[in-house]
Image (tube, rainbow, N blue to C red; front, top):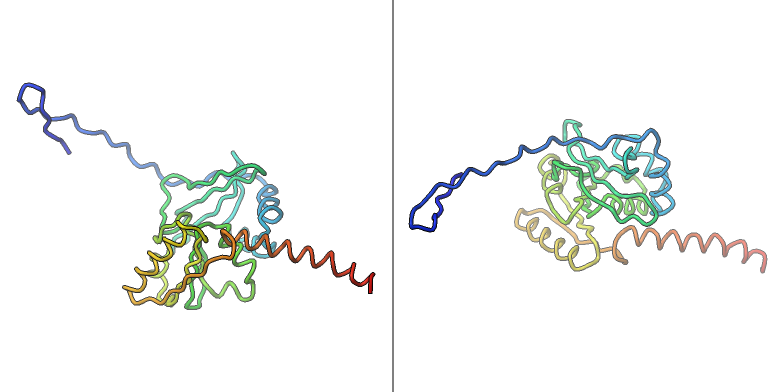
Length: 230
């Protein structure tokens, strides 16, 4: 769109058109030839259950990128086409996380089950952590990671899956997460959709999982000691 601007002498001149760069197409990061780093990172640093991780890897929803060895969490549309990729650094000191350019946020990392329940999380690792702590029949339910505090993937899944009737908002236990949970809960209420806010005990669900793993580890060490002392 052109705009009329003053030339400083009382005359109006037409500004030059703004050149807009075409949006680059969405492309998945190139995969590495093995996934050793992401398995080590997700299982040993993040405590993700082995069976849960294998399930998503087998379904081509998690892989290791070639260039930076990031964990890549892929989101597909209803036709099985990759539309979104969230990247997470796997180095011991890395805090990198970001989305691949031109991804569609409404199709971020998620799983579609057949029950009426869906759980919304901020990050893929929180989603995997929650599933790791509640493994029984987990595939029956639906889960989504917004890769932010957005609600776009949630409302897309509600539109695509008429069986979904009840939402659990499992965002981080901090000001931003709980503020977003209340905002989304209000939107769902206006649409007549039942929702419940589930906050983790710690800052996020991965922190809760790691705490659980630490307690389990202490119990495994304490049990043989008690047997020796009895």
